[in-house]
Image (cartoon, rainbow over all chains, first blue to last red; front, side, top):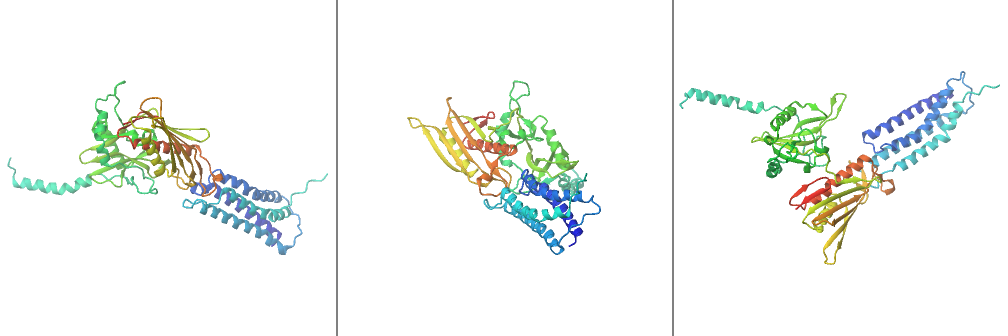
Length: 149
Length: 338
């Protein structure tokens, strides 16, 4: 994977994740999903800042022309850009599905996942991103150097 | 009077020819289910009334109109309650059913209801429909709530029968529009709900206690315990009725909500003669999750608290009414029961 392809992948996936999470968590309670207000907003507070951080760095970065060169071992880049985001995606989809299913109207009491447990699981998934994508993002979207003098 | 055979034959032929038109001439109405079996049904499901029930209470209803006058200080006449629910509720305690002719402008109201049922017009967030169970011999007209957004009306909801038209006449729902609604319940800042009634009666504490206990077990599905306090003559002065419910699907809130609450009730004599006080306190905890730990349950919000207050008010009231041969709700707290 080239450096530019990695940057594009991070930008597109961050936009999709942010949009998808916002849409789902804000709208789902209106359609009977058991994560009612304000618990849905509390989950959004946990999952949104990471992706907003990536998008913020990318927004700064696009105003640097030419882009600074980044030395990288390309054979590992693709794996570490795509892998953690895929893990995060599947964990989020899986946990939100499990939360909705175990707390459905017909679910037996004691079967449900609490919103606190959901928040913990999503935080763990975010941890994977923090130690991989977060570091990669800091190299890919190098901030402009402060003017000397 | 001798009529020519041809005239009689022509009249018979005309009567036979136009007979089907009498059925066809009964204009079709907007129809929707009102009485539904089971907790899940179309949004129009609400409360219907049986003609038999109306006829059973006809004499008592007629008595309310006898000698009533619209002059201040006189015995007030029941008003029509066909275009609104008194206190926004369908509590039978608020209503009487009487022939249309007894109401002032009853005939006009009936005509208007039939017209609205035929056209399906939505006015003031309400619509009149005909119950899907209606027959040509017994038509039930119901008042429904309708949500209107940007001029587009939604389906009829929570329909309540307000008129029953039979071949022999028509019955309309009426009642007294009251300044205060009948709620013997009040809420505390700590989200607790108090229910309190004072019953003027010749019956004793044990009768009301047994009825309250039965309601807690059957309606609210609580495990109950009763303790009596007696005087030296072994006469029961008071009873404490405790109901305990574990974590369960709510019997009061919408489906999907789980609840846990205890009911602490007291039935006691008061210092006044022939007076019994029935009190109850609950503090429900609820959650929308199917979790099995009480720490995940929270206090109710304002809307849920109102739902609990209203439901428990109705349930405790019903438990008192169940033992009264002659029940009269005097105001929001006081009941006369013989």
